[in-house]
Length: 238
Image 1 (cartoon, one colour):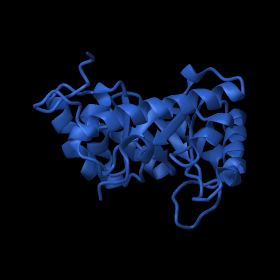
Image 2 (spheres, helix red, strand yellow; image 1 turned 30 degrees about the vertical axis):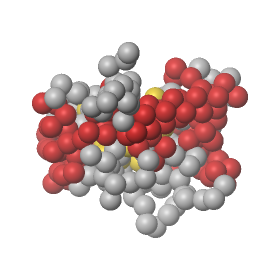
Image 3 (cartoon, helix red, strand yellow; image 1 turned 180 degrees about the horizontal axis):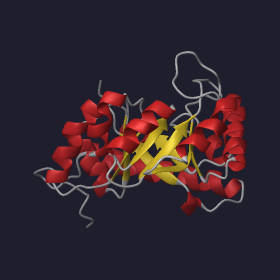
């Protein structure tokens, strides 16, 4: 029996493990179907499990269920989790998907493998100043123009990408966006389509877009990195 099938004292698989294993399988099936609908290779799309507010044990179980990419929103919350998991031999790829303050850059570089939310030259320069080698980054674009969200305006993205490419140790891999919350995922298809067009124009391969409620539409529009929390872990723990 697979190692990730944890059991209670009577030999039964615990509900928490069963839920995560089942959830991961369902999400991957939906991802594969969305990719095939538009003639894409499902292997070109990475599932990132967003573990914010969820405990270390849930992350470890998801890792044992086969997930290798995880994301957190806040540096401070992530630090304790990542260090604990490292001590347990659980070393996935960590993605920072929340806003990064310049005073948290040094800590973030010791924790995360890729930063999804670079949205200013000031932040990028701070990253470059603290980097000990190339840092993979994505430029966050506020495609929908929501005042409550971070990200550079689409029309300003080309200049920012050009300036970032001139900095040492900044490896611009792609673009990221957070779509508005809507009842019908089709309503945000234009947001994902616009990011894809912008990525193509800038010759950037990676597109981080799509979450639990809309990742299938995002995949149909070209997402290579989907950030899924609730569909993997269930409702937030806090």
